Length: 162
Image 1 (cartoon, rainbow, N blue to C red):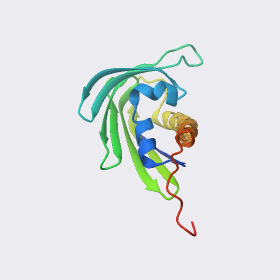
Image 2 (cartoon, one colour):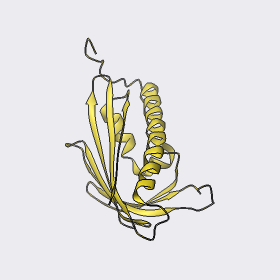
Image 3 (cartoon, rainbow, N blue to C red):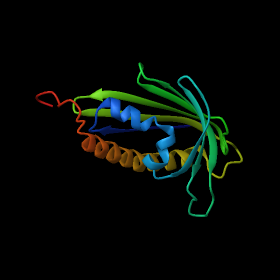
Image 4 (cartoon, rainbow, N blue to C red):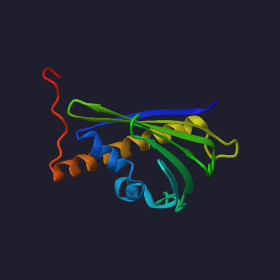
């Protein structure tokens, strides 16, 4: 068995700004509420390898791992996977962006499997990821929309009748 999640949000901001803010890995501690720090370990073209460290959880545990992301601006996708998998057998994430009338759709698809020794199974982790993704997507939406307003960068108006 393996886990799969699929979550998305519509952001009332231009695609370029949404792409820029959500792919600024060094800025993630300001964009996401769960990340305490990001340390970039290597950059090679459109690929970045970095260590993410979370704020302590409810038990005081600090989680940290290394991930690698590769952006494809022309294809409006980002593919990422954990290099240090921790309790996961594997964790792969694909980000999809799509320009919409009046904004940008951003979608996260996560495919993973938990190790047999992990404290939770695939289903429980999928539930946790879905719950947390909704929170983080809403926070990101609000921050990107706020930044768009500050910059006076509005998305193209929706088409008539939509």
